[in-house]
Image 1 (cartoon, one colour):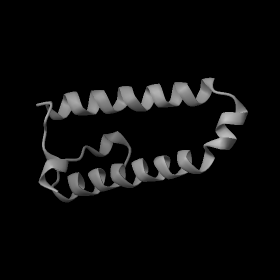
Image 2 (cartoon, rainbow, N blue to C red):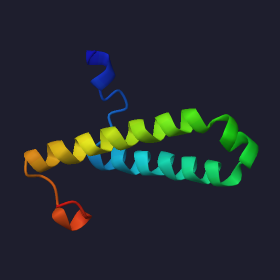
Image 3 (tube, helix red, strand yellow):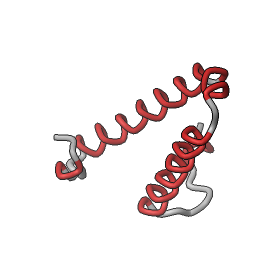
Image 4 (cartoon, rainbow, N blue to C red):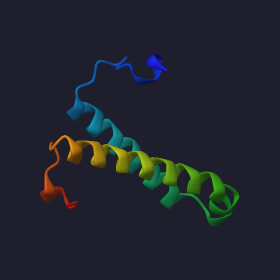
Length: 77
């Protein structure tokens, strides 16, 4: 499990956030641009991936709030 959490790319937190935002933005664009047939075909996978990402984003927010390193101006109090 240690290899899962290694920072192999040597990215800072800010770079990781930027990369994550870029990937999610590209994902959103790809979904917007694909046809209804593909959405229907992949709906269960898209649902799983969306819930999976939301779960982990919630974990990050929760941990940062616990450690008092969360800025409430970011919308979660």
